[in-house]
Image (tube, rainbow, N blue to C red; front, side, top):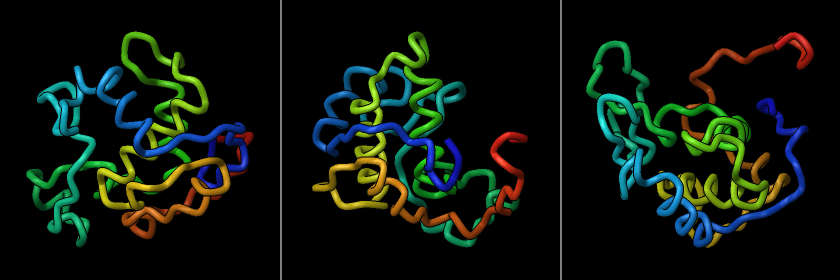
Length: 143
């Protein structure tokens, strides 16, 4: 699924449902509050104001969380759907993946905590770090 999200499947998920799924499927590795489990499992939640200037190379202590560093909400969905949970990747349904994505975006203060995401709503999410990345202008078939 690319940045435009054209390949997103049908489905929907709420922040509230996502929190329940996160606690059951993700917290064992990423922590109850998304703080990560160093050195292997990264923090997912926590927008650090130092990251707003995108000085990650100059200050390695700035966390590269979803709220600080991820450029597209659509590719976040794709990564979760394909690669998570660690020991059963691809086992979450489309609805569960929308819900976990909604929870993580809300926890990072990218969306409000009363949102239900579907393909259209996810495509409309503008990530804080979006303009910090060089757009991938290759055609989807060559990515």
